[in-house]
Image 1 (spheres, rainbow, N blue to C red):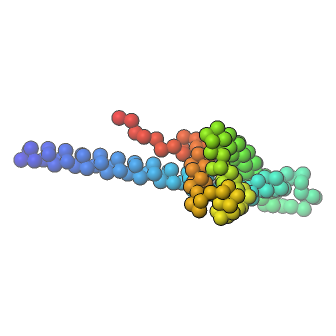
Image 2: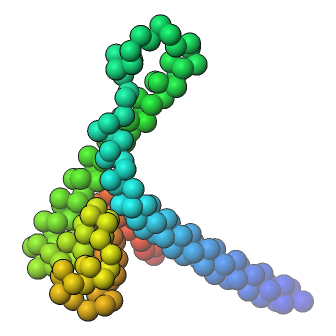
Image 3: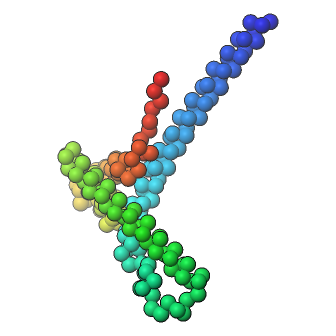
Length: 168
């Protein structure tokens, strides 16, 4: 009877180990999807973020006659300033990543991938217009943009964007 119990425990350990492995794999895949989603979201909103960084009133000095505002309004103004500061940092980071991506694609001889991304997200050009401008087939703009987004994710989020494999 003892042999059966030992065998059952061993089977249970193996099943648990496999379940944990599968769970970890799913979590890594979810993380990768989130990073790609966040990269697309940043690019989709890039122009608005840039405008916010450039135009937001963020300084108490920028507001005329501050004495008219109560503490709650002043706190709101300070919140806007913090938001603008974070936005400026993120926009600068995106611009650096875009420049690095452009350089990488030029070196690889794949400048069209970068150009498609720029046209789609920054210039707000449709896939059909990209197809015409870059003289490519119907599905190519989508493939190019997806490829560029993956590379951009690494430049924006570093190691969090890379699927790390378990060693051992």
